[in-house]
Length: 116
Image (tube, rainbow, N blue to C red; front, side, top):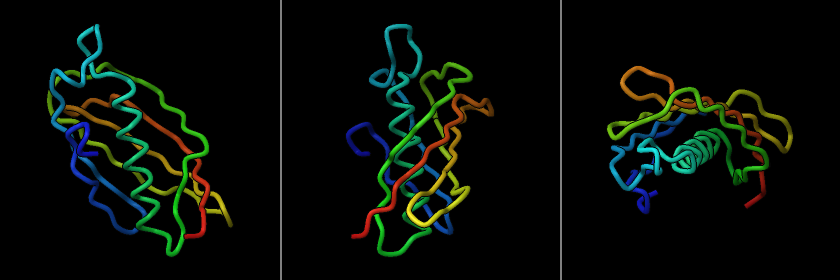
């Protein structure tokens, strides 16, 4: 995550939180936060939420859907993720990205669990 300027997410009990102070390098040509940056943030935060809830398994994204609700701008982004359901080899996780009290993104993903 350091490549895009974010610290590792804080996590525990199937939840994780990450913050990023977005700046000009995170913007697209329209001057809003690039969708790929937002996708990277939710994917990494969800993976960390799952790692905090499993033992001896590694989560691998198998499906990721993002709904972009509002454009983001430079400033603090807060990403929260939580494990919603767990099966034998799959986990469903949700995440949200907020900025100044506004929802920018809602994400839903399915992760496969691989044995380490």
